[in-house]
Length: 181
Image (cartoon, rainbow, N blue to C red; front, side, top):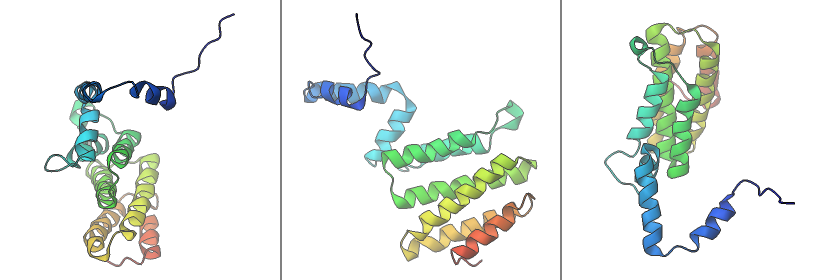
């Protein structure tokens, strides 16, 4: 009786990679690079290539948190958060992560304010990201903090327009981190 083999794992892939020579490995990476924009963004970020490695990640966040409502595009918190996760896997520089988290908050709050969005799940995700941004900023050197904290204070001020206690939650979080306007 034949037994079914389980799904391939990283160990299986790693074993196969051991059979590649340098040219074969470069060819594989080239094929992966050509296969998708996400792979390109990953490799550009990992190797620090291009003027702004955050640009494709910001573009994804912007698309999913501030969609074109005239084109019937919708929001996706999960896809916006995936951009941050993808950057973290590619490079994960603390200052880049903090920047993406603050940018997420700016875009989510700006879109909500601009169109009058009333979506409690969207607001909950915004407050969670706001807290993650505060944690990320707190881990940065002192010189890098004030500009990012200032941008979060603007987000908090806008968020008082939403109801649902969003601005109040942000007030409390800013207070916990000792951030003043």
